[in-house]
Image 1 (cartoon, protein in one colour):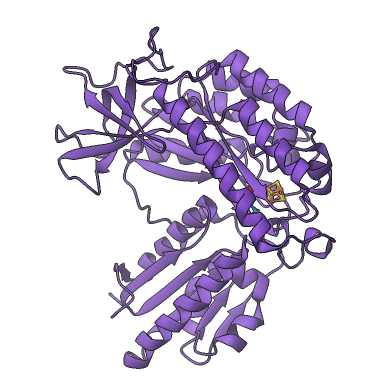
Image 2 (cartoon, protein in one colour):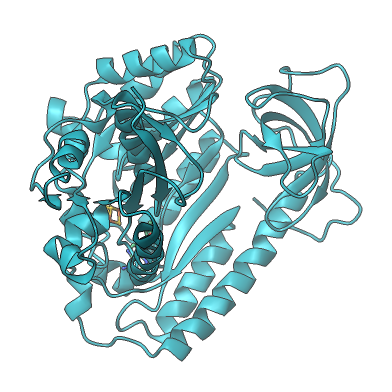
Length: 463
Ligand code: 5AD
Ligand code: SF4
């Protein structure tokens, strides 16, 4: 029996996307149908993030908007779940008393019960520990050809800037067999690409077998026929070892891309951040992965303006970026988070200083991203089609195994199909290409770069 419709808005990372698919799955099992607008919905759910302060601010803005809709439609229920709910707890109901249900990160499975209880009075439940691994819950996936697969939840590290351990708890790994079974089932449903999720995928398994099992997991998944691509996020540089690199190089399905968050380039800052590696160790890991997979794309996360960051320390971040030559970097201005050690450190920097450094870093990285993309002009790439380009329906959008976004003329291919595309033009954040006639899936898996650089190419230096 239909109970009306639900609308979900997800903030933050891929783990939240994964959890939202479970929340949607449970609502559908209860008889709700999905809608794309909060207006007229029976349930409006915000799955929240609290990693930086602007994520908080955005939630309260959205709640104000939902309240205006609820005033016109009093039967509508507003639900707040996820990391900010775990962090703010009862504060959400104090700031927004019209919210019907608040649930944290550890009890997604309680959503149907909490919704029923909220017929009587607002219901609120935050637990300290995970009651059921979220992957065991029914899912309503947003894509037919891609799936998020959680391999572990929580984090045992204590990076001083990061609120994740406080809101997601200790690391719990899922058994290898469960993950393989899930991926097998997904492939039978038509999924061709999976992204493995964990706060620190390289420590996966330590809590269940005593030793990390990530490379074993990759080898096991590589056996699944008809799975085309595996991505994963994120490895922690301190735990990233040669067995994982070997598995990446040897497994047909593992894409030639690694996201290896560095956060800062100076040893003093890395120490204050409690990252447990040095600049030199990090650069050794980059060399190790490039030795094994020369054309791999490397991306990273960097925080600018961590407490006490000096100009000289910031310049070490710039010089590290120049040394590594990342394909792309996600750069963040430091945001003080409650329950973190860095929030109480001395030396918080004025906004103008952080902004100015942030812009210098972005300009440097944009130049490098462009050069990294320009190396690919002339190469033939296997592209997994995501769908029509948003700007131009005559073109398709897809990603190479190196995770580069490519636009190319449509041949009517459905999302999830593979095509071979020759790269014709580089931009900072995407590539443009043309279909290679008569070829669908037989592009070289690892990129073969053209021997002669394109004529428009500026020297991009060594990779
Ligand atoms: N301020 C700014 N950026 C942060 N990140 C995590 N915590 C903070 C913070 N307090 C960034 C890190 C991490 C990414 C997911 O978010 O770079 O890798
Ligand atoms: Fe946060 Fe560090 Fe854990 Fe990543 S490894 S989730 S940055 S504490």
